[in-house]
Image (cartoon, rainbow, N blue to C red; front, side):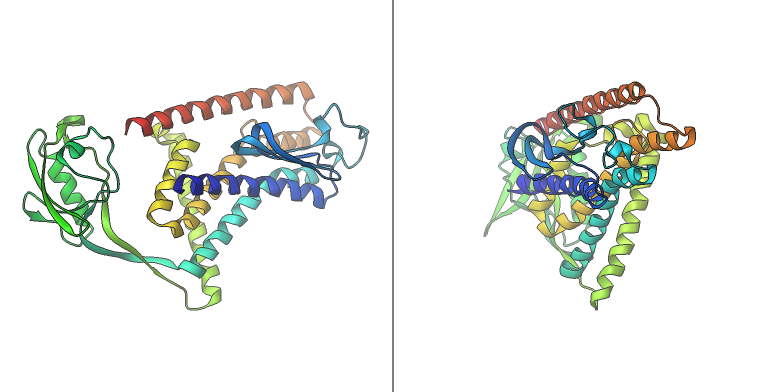
Length: 358
């Protein structure tokens, strides 16, 4: 269910983005003949008076189609309500509306989170460290008898107190004893067990037992004093996320070789969202806002096949007084689309392999 919740969040953000394009066109009276969520084969469709609405096989994507590029359209080429026949400003509004929709939606998500759940106000730590999952059934932890859901209360006789340092202490102890037996006191339900685990030697000679660890306890939230406080907190958090996201993109460009490996594809994003949903479903508001802002910033980049690339063509048209030849635009867009698809496939394969190996 956590994975479905994460996929649902991504699908919702894509719907919001495409609805931005769709609404901006329809409100200006511009013809729209297709509104699709996903790519690939059509699973469901409905033909409206002007537009075909469809859900396709691969849900992580979508598009708004215009009859300008449809050879089967019966709309005359000189129709003033075709997108390509509209003034530059009208077209710029349609192209940028998806980005604007994602940004507005992100802000509203943050307002809802602060108004209903509240702002993060610290963590109520409990003694011990939680083991949410094992990396494999053959890991040293599994061989030693540790199970998902166990709470490690002490390591080699040293108690893990109710503090944020408990996880660090446990991790350091495991890493410092490769190929050496470690005794754990583990709470499983209402029982306490003494288990012995021998860490294997991993990267850089450090010990590892093949578990995920997280602090034991729960996040504390504080709701604003009044209704308008949620809008203020939402604006502050929105500004913070945008700033950090832009800094992240800046670091990616300035130090690409070191940061490229940190770029996440849809599989890694779904995995992260599923983990968040499993731990604290209310945190999905913040997760969705973060992804929505990233989606907006990525789409506004001046790259072919993205909204920013199309806006770049409009800028060139405004400066030249006429658009670039269609064959040049089509060539650039198709090349960009192939590169983006290639990158997407690479990230999906890499992230899936990483999840399989973990």
